[in-house]
Amino acid sequence: MPALFPRLYQAPDKPALRFGDRVIDYGRLAGAAHALALEIADAGRVAVWATPSPHTCVGVLAALLAAVPAVPVNPRIGEEELAHILTDSTPTRVLAAPGDELPPALDALPRTDVALEPEAAPRPDGTTSAPDENGPALIVYTSGTTGPPKGVVVPRRAIASTLDDLADVWQWTGDDVLVHALPLFHVHGLVLGVLGPLRRGGTLRHLGRFSPEAVAAALEEGGTMVFGVPTMYHRLAEALESGGGGEDGGRLTAALRGARLLVSGSAALPLHDHERITAATGQRVVERYGMTETLMITSVRADGERRAGTVGVPLPSVDVRLVDDEGRRIEGGDGETVGEVQVRGPNLFTEYLHRPDATAQAFAGGWFRTGDMATQDADGFYRIVGRRATDLIKSGGYRIGAGEIENCLLGHPGVAEAAVVGEPDPDLGERIVAWVVPAGGRPPAEQELIDHVARRLTPHKRPRVVRFTDALPRNDMGKVVKRELGRG
Image 1 (tube, one colour):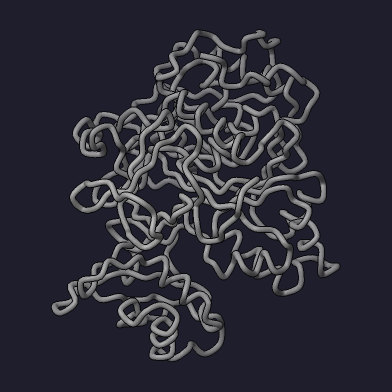
Image 2 (cartoon, rainbow, N blue to C red):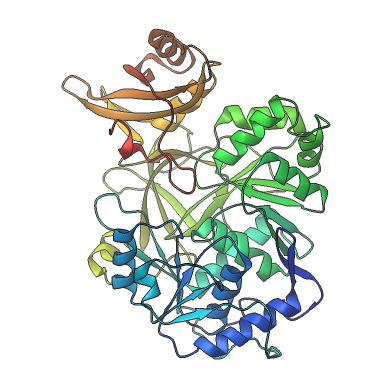
């Protein structure tokens, strides 16, 4: 197959990575990664201590050049989860930045420190072997809901396919400078946020820690694209509404207005935040949809209509369909009928590591069953309503998406955050329960919020119960972990 990074050697003096004040050009990156690739070429798999640093980027790039599967490890991982990942993936060594302190389980493996200064000139082809396009590139562990995390085996072809599709729909080129502060152990921050710029021959500017001020500064200094999760865009919207998030009051507004593309993913961006960002900057945030097993599935196109609240249309190489509870395809697009999203294409994973049973259950006639529920309108735009297990509520004979109710609640001035779940009910089957973080001061009355939803949506979509909380439980990507609501 063609090299994953055909532009790695074309412009050695061009900046490839910037973390804080540390800038690494393509020549240095290629040399460091190639030297490390030669060192680990005989490794079966390597664990990568995935801190937000250039060392993580070099380590993963080296593994890809050597055709050695990389297992990114969250540096905040707990002992039990780490033990499971190491037992399951059996890496033969760990890659880490010099001086990084590793947990005992990782420290027991042979360690290779990732050097940023190359000791050897890179080879023109940048590879130590001729890798199979279906061969494993990454093993990324998903969050377990009813059991330990599963290792998703992501092949090289999936990475190439997704990144080339996104280059098409986002008009992504080597001239782009991508700004983000995402963690580097998930698909969003690592595949899209690191490998994406490197495949295009562009530049990654990683902020380390997210703040509106840091985003403004990076865009002022040449950033063209921003990747973020809804929590980050919510904070940008708050800063814009409070005066621009800078000493001059309009610094953030001007910086975002000048960006070429703002992209949100990993969860739905509330309509209220869409509207606030557009009102302040004129920019319409682009949403896309994907998951670890599929990489990217759909996106709003940069050169097309940007419909807030939708995740756009299928990527060029991806087939998508909605099916009902019996597995029958839902034809047409009325924008109302909810079905499960199923996917096929070169973007798919190959297997759950050591889990043939789970792999077989995840497919239906060659289509991957995402477990996500969505609607499709007449123009082909998809709107995700949530997970089948936690966000599809069957109440009084209706199939109701939690996301629609959450967006409605967020339109109330007394609501800062909201999460909607279904709870067992002897009469309705499930009753709609809303967890709400008040916007400040005294929380609104429960009945006021119930009536707010009933007026704006329909009465059968109104919460039957509203519970107030100081914060919603979230994971590292900013997604609300609904199974944690009410615990403790």
